[in-house]
Length: 296
Image (cartoon, rainbow, N blue to C red; front, top):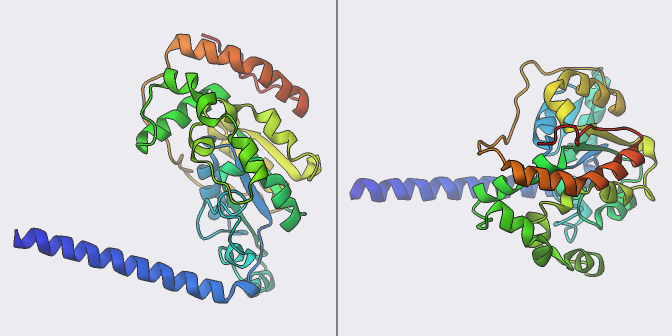
């Protein structure tokens, strides 16, 4: 019993030290916020589409300095915080100058996949970062929806079956987008976590960015291409970001979850649901992702 109590005490002390260290780091970075830079690029989505893998690959690129944490969430859930808080996530301008002087110019960026789906993010980004470059990874919406569901189950957030979660999605999130658009500090747990089908209607989300950013400032990558041929996808990304072509040896796929395959009947049903939305996306982008070519 004494050993167990000692273990708990050590664990509590360790957590307290970690919290104290984090507070000290944040305080230091906040004090230097005026000297810090804003990002040159944003990975805006989609959730469960490979954003974590891309962020981690780019974080190893010699000409990239990513944010302190992957999902900063400034333009969606943390917009009530100051610009100084946001800048505290990035390196100082002095660091960028030193790197450039040493022949290694760097760019900075972050990845928050809720940015693509949150309706107020495009206008907020355009106001603060009018020249930022945007990257969107888009995954087959059927697979994305099921992976999203499994992710929420693994977090203990989702208790319904996949079929029931799909059936009740509009009951859960209906009206939430309007609240997000009309209430400055409104946060919707349901909109962020239970939007399995809605997040897969990519064309509507991309079109929200059109009034604020020209097409050449947004790069759309098919997630399946990124998974199968990461080298080719990274060449497109580095060219878009105007940094040297570079490939991480043995890139890892992050946040992959083991789960049972989707029921074939449900898969066919979702393919039918997404088919017209996918066609609208293809028309918008001028290219076909062939997501409807593997019908059960």
